[in-house]
Image 1: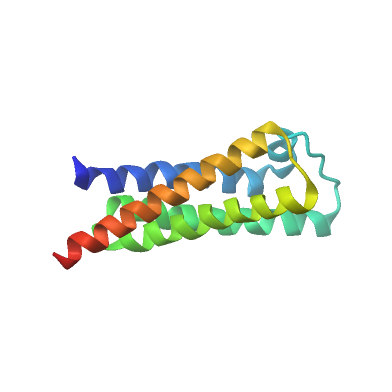
Image 2: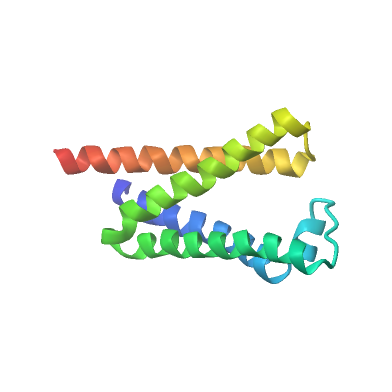
Length: 132
């Protein structure tokens, strides 16, 4: 059971990141509208919005790959720690600097923090098992 937790986590986390990344990359106006954010039809803005969506999609592929290939599990977990951890830290920074966002974005912060901590715990557990 314990050995299955890492691949399951990586596939679920990767699919979640992939859906978000694809939404930002492919349908950014509709994606951001779900959080009451209106994007202008400015090509400069859209370029800046879509680029992180592509990066998030690539990170998601690394996570999912780690769920299917044991050799890629550790890099997948590291990717999850950095992606979800930095999203959470950046949202906390924004909360302090800009004020409290909508409830859905606060929920995203909490989910990102949980995913980062789970990925970190799985990474730590894997390193301990490898040292035995």
